[in-house]
Amino acid sequence: MSHHIHQVQQHHIMQPTVKKTPARQNTESFKDVLAGVQELKVSKHAKERLSQRNITISDNQWQSISEKMSEAKQKGVTDSLVLTNKAALLVSTKNNTVVTAMNKEEAASKIFTNINGTILIND
Image: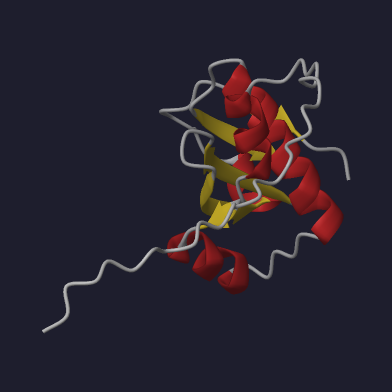
């Protein structure tokens, strides 16, 4: 049995150079940025109501609704009524979700409870 010690050659590991970039000056907080990125959800119930009542909302209107919901949330609104020229939507800004939908005729004769804000969308 041989008791020789073998010498292991050392290898130098090159570490990548890290360039330090100055921190960006950004006025939006991470929470605000995240809120803007969150996707608007439409509940199963709201999808059914939109379909049953033949309510169509364009992509531009959905974008406007989403943006206004984000603004409302920043102002402390948690549950809101969104009024467009064709529909009324009850939304949860807290969950970024459309809860239900009505056409204009149905909305005219209703009383809306448990909301703490209203959003008007001009078509």
